[in-house]
Image 1 (cartoon, one colour):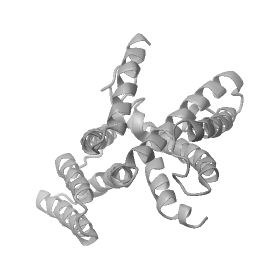
Image 2 (spheres, rainbow, N blue to C red; image 1 turned 90 degrees about the vertical axis):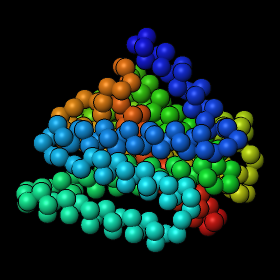
Image 3 (cartoon, helix red, strand yellow; image 1 turned 135 degrees about the horizontal axis):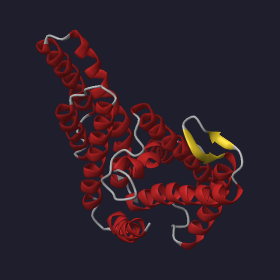
Image 4 (spheres, rainbow, N blue to C red; image 1 turned 180 degrees about the vertical axis):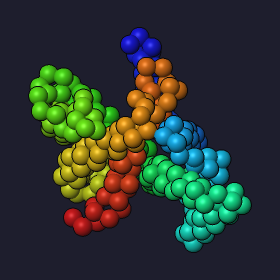
Length: 271
């Protein structure tokens, strides 16, 4: 517990510094490193299940994809990169002369879709106008819900949410987390955020986002739990003492990143 507290005291200020630093690139570089580490963690978990992803090509492709996004290259280059990966994976299977290695293609590509595609939306958010506010919202709404759900579940949790996947989660905890998220979001709106950052209906948008990201973040947490239970592990890795791995820390944010991005870009234009 002491190690966990000390790590938190270091990680939270470090994250705040990265979010609000004038240049987006310290956050971008850190995010790419974290996403790459999380991808390798998923590959290593699958290895324990007997699957054998092509880890090096997968990790390298993930970094190439981030570069394409950061440099804002044409979308066709992104599609072309995926085409090259698919070709490479099947070439590796063919020259291995082992048809059973076909399963390695899925074990390589799926974690990329899960970690790299979802995580790339966080990079897009930071590169947008007012990007530090969007990243602040992403982590604020994600972390406040997590904390609120934990404390609400500790005091009032009686009915399990999905015990087959995550026995520690309760329905009361989730509902309490949503309520706390909404309250904290209203406070943040008047205390820190620009008045009309999401247009004239900023408060309404923020309340919707507080609920939406609470739900999607919980689904992101459960998704990581599915992978870990399938692979027979408790944590994605032991990188962070008493806290698990990188994936354990960003699983909710992975689901929330595309939801927040799509909401800002498209939904706020509707009203």
